[in-house]
Image 1 (cartoon, rainbow, N blue to C red):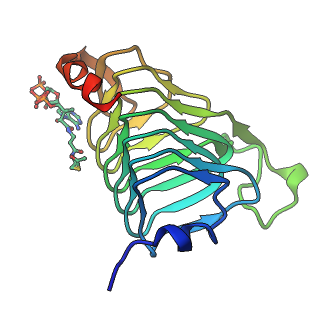
Image 2: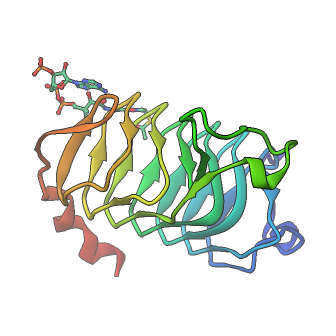
Length: 182
Ligand SMILES: CC(=O)SCCNC(=O)CCNC(=O)[C@H](O)C(C)(C)COP(=O)(O)OP(=O)(O)OC[C@H]1O[C@@H](n2cnc3c(N)ncnc32)[C@H](O)[C@@H]1OP(=O)(O)O
């Protein structure tokens, strides 16, 4: 039994466009009245949730159990990926105590912090990490496992921890391979 959708089956999903070599597990959940676009050579593994507005570039791997909450937009550029169990929030409740926190309460009693999340080219997010709204992982960012990204990163840097801090510059050797994909 093939655990990925066929190209024909992909056409029945709420995806506006997708390129060649797209492998999406049949165990992925889509919840979207907005736009989801997927480039070519993309794989999305079991038990991921994709909701809202999500734009994935090319050569992207989303590991199992990732959740992409894209009500205010999520963009992942080429050659970037999420290791298993990552969560990306483009909206989050205000936890300061002055508001209720639940989609089942009245909207006027909630305060939602929102902002697009952009993961630029050649970035990788380590397993079980969380990315908060309104942040940009600049080109070549690596995020260590179990990290919390609350602010935008600097390019070609390695970040770890909660909240994540830069620990060093990242090497650029991977760029030597890119011409073979053009
Ligand atoms: C797509 C897939 O691969 S799926 C499998 C999932 N794989 C992952 O999630 C890998 C994620 N990788 C990591 O977290 C790695 O530890 C990296 C990339 C952040 C750093 O790796 P290295 O460059 O080898 O750095 P190194 O192990 O020397 O660690 C440097 C320092 O950061 C600390 N550190 C490393 N990783 C983390 C982390 N995730 N959280 C907090 N601190 C960390 C180390 O303890 C060390 O601290 P010290 O200098 O005080 O001793």
